[in-house]
Length: 240
Length: 157
Image (cartoon, rainbow over the protein chains, first blue to last red):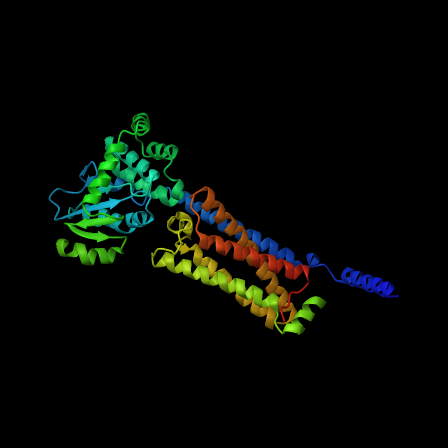
């Protein structure tokens, strides 16, 4: 008897679920799926466009037109302020400082002859930093340190830790119009490996323990601080 | 609400289906707000030595048109919390609409966070544990929302 009652109960349950309209038949489900998928595709499209845009450096080659450039130094020799920047191409805060401190310095103060800026690249963050710095020195051999340095910081935002493979470093060189054969020979032979080690040692001797570090007429400034603060505390006394 | 659900609810007085989703969305909201603060205040995220939050947070993929992705995430979780409240307090028709909106939001959120995880793994080669946590929370929320539909429980009384 008990088995029969159980069977009847199960049958009734099946009958009930068959009578209940499936949610797939309701417009709300299809509407939700369509809206969700369209929204996701829109966001993915926007973000991938953002990634492609990141390949454009914050500073373009034309920015340097008319500025005195010698190796890793840009700006007039008689500028009242000398700023030395120690940065690692793989350091995220250096990429931030490149946009928030370096770019306004270049556009407003180096161009106006008030600041002479010297870049001291270091490789504190492992083999990828080492290779990227060697590549930048290879670009310097062709008189193109600055455009290459700008491209490397854009690449960090574009590819993160994957930005500094040999193949990509050569791609960037080709993008900015370097002699690719000479650049590849320089990079493949690790021509500047010793120079990078020397730059690291020099930085450590000068008390640089992290990046970015700036020396504004000898005063040490650490970190990617907001430009307003950088200007007010360290630059203003010399340029006003 | 199914018979089993009703029985559990009657027995404990707690609607675990509702509070479970509120818990997941609340946790996601906290994670997103933390990452938004890290991004806007330019401070270093607490990564506990796992992954590379800095590289992820400074990459070109951490914002859309100047709006941090984490802030979009916070908005999504806050919206889901509002929808959960509607599903609890509203009429059956309102609950159904809110459930649909919740499903749409979570499908978009899950697909987008899957894309972000792909970017982390294969483009920028850096993983942010906070982002992975958020991805798992969204996936769990989506699973529970789909299960609500499977169980025919759109109203979370």
